[in-house]
Amino acid sequence: MLSLTTLINNLIANASLLLVGLYLISRFTKLGFTNKLPIRRRITISILLAGLSMLITLHGVLWNAQADFQYGFIPLIISALYFGISGLRITYVTSIILLPFIVPGETLLIITLLDYSVAAGIAFLFLRRRERIKPTQDIRTVNMISLTCIALFSAFNMANYEEPSAYVITLIWFLFIGYATGLFLHIVYGGIRKIERSRRLITKYKEAAYTDTLTGLGNRRQFDEEMKRVDEEVFTSPHEIALLLIDIDHFKSVNDTYGHDAGDAILVELGQRLSGIARADDMVCRNGGEEFSVLLADCNLPQAISIANRYLTEVSKQPFQLPDEAMLDVTISIGVSSTSERKVITSAQLIKKADIGLYVAKRNGRNRIGKWNQRKAN
Image (cartoon, rainbow, N blue to C red; front, side, top):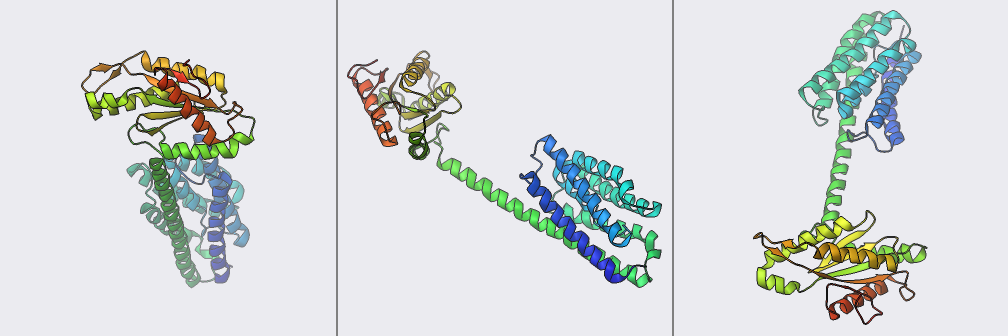
């Protein structure tokens, strides 16, 4: 015979075990529960959820030699919530395979199988109506229906209770604690969703703050932030970088002659051409107006000059298309500097030397590369 106190304590212990298990799984996987995980990670978490179901069921059996009132079915709902029908299927099948090794006795095994099957079936029906269960609404509904059905199935095991009133009181506690657990998960999940939404908004605003709205490249703020990183990391390491400052030749006359829409079109296409040549580790920015910059990672001065020549060729070999579909030849001038040069030991000097090089290129006829320490163009 089972005392009412033992049963209620068991319910509370099961609910605590469920919440702790879900927390540990989320910490173990590091990325937490999300339907954007790779397929292998989803399978792993689905199997871990099945293991949590078995742990909760085993705890109930060891506690009082029965498993009619327990929360082992809730991980099935969690699996459906985050991973859809595929996750539900993996967790359910794994649980059903393991149950005969956990639950002793034919009667308890049948009741527990019914518990899991009812929860999985209800979750499956909800998933058939929607691509995924909506945590803001359906998780509480699925949980409550499952609790009710499982409570009814537990009537087959009513003989294990000292008196019918003990069963009724335990049933009330079961529904209360079970629904409270589901509500707690719902609140926690809602909080996580709000945090993730805030993080996405912060990331979005941060990206907007560091992005040039016209070209989609990094803006001056992004360039300045990268220069801070150069001071902190590059000059204290054996790695070399180079900087190209790029300016469109006679850009003011383009705006005056063809209009600002034509100037914007040229800026956008130039940004695309520069990005097309840049390597994955290079950073292309529009510093303002018609000036662009390219920060070349792991690059010394001779290599930077070679890359700059590629930019000159790429820009001049094909005319730029204007909004009225007219074609216009455009050239650029480039100033180049590198941390491989002896007199470049700070980011400010790197920028200044490239800026002087750009002036040299402009002074010597444009459409060419300039260095700070030369008088003639390359």
